[in-house]
Length: 77
Image 1 (spheres, one colour):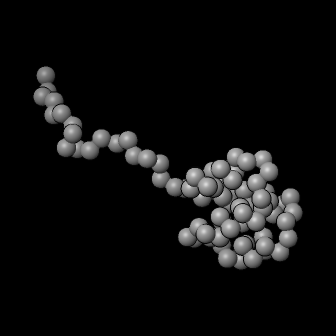
Image 2 (image 1 turned 180 degrees about the vertical axis):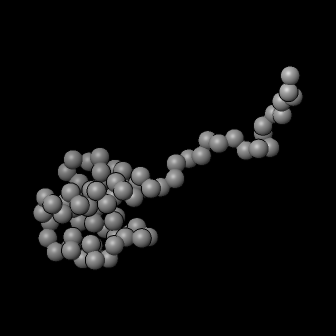
């Protein structure tokens, strides 16, 4: 996922590298990949960026939740 973030943040990131990253995702759209491989256009680059951002937003964040075993029971007053 770090590679995807790095690719998105780079201004001159190679189009084919981004496409390879998208294709390596577990649930990528094979038809979209085929269409994006046809040629590099501004619209295709925009679609690729959108799909990679969508993947990053779906990934679960690091959990900071406290487990039940670490909670301190309180007595009612």
